[in-house]
Image 1 (cartoon, helix red, strand yellow):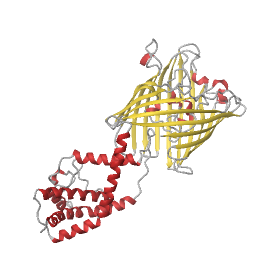
Image 2 (cartoon, helix red, strand yellow):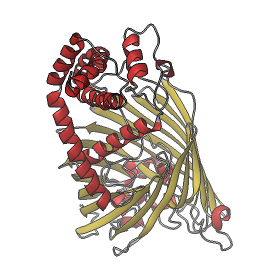
Image 3 (tube, rainbow, N blue to C red):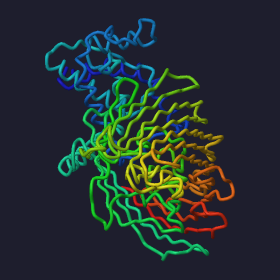
Image 4 (cartoon, helix red, strand yellow):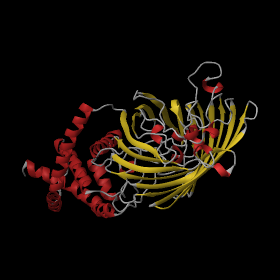
Length: 548
């Protein structure tokens, strides 16, 4: 018998065992490939999708790590999920104990019920061939029957195309991986960028503005050291400023106006670190921290963390209660229970606006601060509720909804932001937020806010109110598009309903591509500046957002 025939005979029992183990899994894989997967709702910070090449690299890298992190399996008893009563137990036992060409997962499982693709089978068959070649070299293989030889020949013919295709894919992937490694930016950091171009102006009788073309750019360096944590180092620049309206109101503030710089000067506007502790998540901000960084704002499709893909205005983006305070501090999100319909959690946070200032009356605890507590409740995948409390201290000349900027308000009327008449004051704010998604094509969300302000001077106490309701139609006209309508009363002082500053906003985000969207919209303000019978202000905006 020739040396070639000897090798062929030795290979056949291995391939026969693999065929017995995998035949049913190949059918299962074909069925599973055609079955639909349920759509999942993500309530978290927006993230970008990895390119197909990077996904392939990560997949093959993980598979390689799993193969090398498990020692050689020498007995089928090493698999915790394989039982003697399993229908393929004997075949698996033969492959493991006679040939040692079966590997499991790092946690000691085999996962025999998982669907198998033809490519995976071809890769496993190739691994067994390599193992048998080692056995031939050591002259430890046993003789086989003619039936085994026939089985081997059929397998070789059946999977010859798959093996050839797999070899070509691996070669191409290795070339791409080498190119990525040679030109990679960092092994721990990825860059997420956003550039906003906006043309905006106000119209009507309350028009004190000219048409402007403004911009804002954010470059967020996201670094992970463990795979579960993330460090955000964001550089921002821009020239956007708020359109001035009557009575110096802040009602015209749009999301791309939330920017502490000017003149396209670049600086670090956010430096924060997230890391898990058990089922909970810890948030630490060194600068630029805001409440919506760590707490659910319960306003899907309108909230985009003041980015360029949600509502146009800061009022429609999130409840004004999250605009109270900001800066440096920490927060903790505590999750309770496991699965089930009701998923409660508790969020606690503390941010100081002057945390970096060592002077008297400033610092992390002696200056302006806002402490937040929020109880969150997800009822299934369709309903989310939240109750929020914020306690704050505000120094002389500080706006209530300052967003951590100390002096400038970003939402509401001037009266609501400066109840104190220039004196220091404390605030206790209460909010309720809710979001209901009756279908994948409709989302309804809203909020209510009440703030009690007590100043340290004479006649500087007051009450601030606000409420809003929004309806969003995701994927309207095209997947990725959003049609949004939002209405309510911007934060105002007192309970006099004759001069409530009502806000009505409509926008349509049109997704040109995965990286470009165009959002035209209109903001209609009645009684701007909380002035009865004041001329309405109408703001028109055309926003273009580039994400990369």
